[in-house]
Image 1: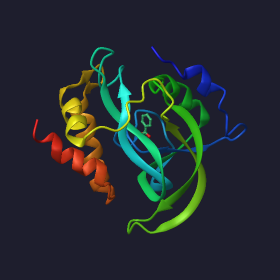
Image 2: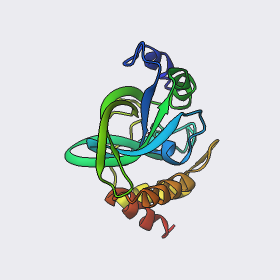
Image 3: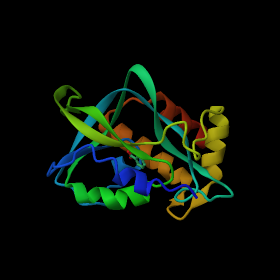
Length: 190
Ligand code: BEZ
C-alpha cells in the first residue's frame, strides 16, 4: 500500500522552528489525538474541501475504500478549519497516520475571532492529498459519493461517522461548506 511517511519526513518547511501551526480541515478538526499547545479557528484561502481521497486504511479497506477529505485549488474560495499550535515532534506520528497519499504543504493561515472576523495571519502546515496520488478517487455524482461513504468501514470506524462528525464540527465553527452539507443530506438516504 501507498506510504508517504518517508517523503513527509523530508518536507521540513519549518526547520529550526520550536513551534508550528498545523491546520486541520478534515478529521483533525474533531479528532485531535495529539498534544497541542493551543487551538484556534482559522481558514485558508484558495482551497475547497472535497471527499475525493480514498481511504484504504482508516475509513475503508483495500477491497472497499472509503472516502475522506482533501483539498482542491479554488481561487477566491475559503476553507474553514482548526489550527493547532504544536511542537514539531507531533508531526512524526501524524505522518504515519496520514501515510495513504497525504503530503505536508506550507500555506498561509488566517485566524478568526468568535464573529468569524479575520484577526491575524501566519504560515502553517496542511496535509494535502493531491490528484496525482494513487489513492485519489476524484469527483463522482454526490449520491455515489454518499453511497460509498454509507457503506465503507475501516479500522478507524464507519466512514459515515467521519462525514457526520465533520459536518457537526463545521456547524459548530459557523463555517459554510456546500459540498459537505449536501453530502450529509444525501447520506440520510442510505
Ligand atoms: C485534516 O484534518 O486536515 C487532515 C486529516 C487527515 C489527513 C489529512 C488532513
